[in-house]
Length: 154
Image (cartoon, rainbow, N blue to C red; front, top):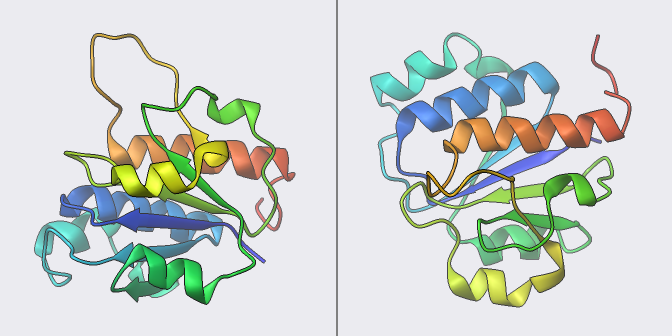
């Protein structure tokens, strides 16, 4: 098995490219939920992912509901600044889905309302609204990998 990163309507190609490289390096699945704020042949996207796209396990979905329907038994965790739990308070398992929203608005309120017990945040000062999407995804993913003993990574 492997972890899954789900990007719901990502807007900035460089962030998605950086996350794809992190996924390639860790054997993590990357799920992109449309609409995307960029073209998948965008030079910025490809440059940020460098020459690792061949190693990315990538799926496209037309909605977040489509992801949930396809992975009915999956455990989903949602990154949001509105959560009371810190990501390190959660116990992750191999195969979990780590869900992140678009850069400008985060996840839709209805997604957050449907999953109140699975929300997580990254602690930070109130000087900024949020961390960069690719940084946040890497931080949470590496905590999940740490908790599971970095399976199949050297």
